[in-house]
Length: 487
Image 1 (cartoon, helix red, strand yellow):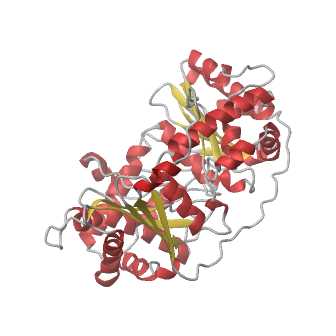
Image 2 (image 1 turned 90 degrees about the vertical axis):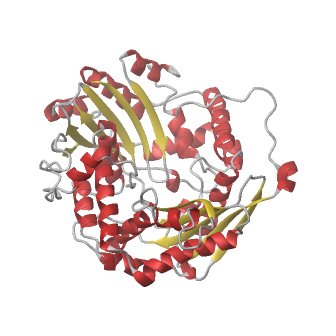
């Protein structure tokens, strides 16, 4: 998701002020590169006969290539009882094929001077490697082989699921804040599968079988549900020939139908108090807001989504932004510090519903209720008084400069293109996004602050320090704990 880079240099800010890019042609033809990044050439996209999408962005600045295989399946595509299976399968994709033994995939990538990893999100699973340009065919052959012929024995799965359970312990169950946010998601969303954690509930991990992962693989890992993204020192014709050679022979299969799971309209405020052994309290205010769909023809909800992006940046887009000044520095309260930290975030885009989140860690002597009221007051101030034009231009310029800086990396180019594909967006989405964000007005920012922050759509999560919970903490397994893998 786009974010404001607080450390953008003056050079990038100056570049961002030059102007916006022209809209691209349909994906069958090259998409003009954004003038924000002169070294980034055109993008091309094509589809193999079996349904696999291939997206290529040549970038000749260094003899390196990033290859990403995106599968449009994540935790939102799971069903109750097998939560975490998308992430578990991601781990198992490194465990072999008929020709490659467990662990050998990454060793081969390293041997040719590359690095590889993967990640699972609510919306997608992606496998990425960065390799010398001359080794692209070897990398593509490896990726196509595991996509089409992934296999492993039951014992390998049983060993790896213990690693995944340890990952959940270390990253979630041993972090009171992570547990609070996990519980908050389960309260915010009722019908949406976003209510479930990506790593899965521990009880589901304990009950998961090898065949659960195999069935998920057979169902969703089909060419028509995947995109191969190549960015770096490549020729489009070369990539096309290699993709046809190594991915083109994979049999086609239909993508399973996805049933709509629309989130019902929230009809009043919800509140969660999560009591745990913690050093400090934490307050999170989650508001349901519309996502940006990136349609070529702008809509009212898309305009609101972009204004919400700017609003989040006004609140927390740079050092000394509104939340920091009001809650941390105490500007306007006679220097009284209300929070040790405060922040704002907005998802902008995704396959499911999105949230606008305000967070604060109350300072010593400040109650969660006081911190919550202070967060709301900053949004209310914008709803009442609006934002200054200079403030608006500052955050938009910094946002665009951050996007330029990000795209200096071929890895980020591949990740951005894959993310747009996952969300069903066109290749020129990045250019259109920057152009439309530049057009957001102060009146639009004030309008969304007025319309989207009522208690009707609010779910409040409060982490409450409770030393008495120490005895109720989950038991840590005896003996050596499994080492976490990179992915």
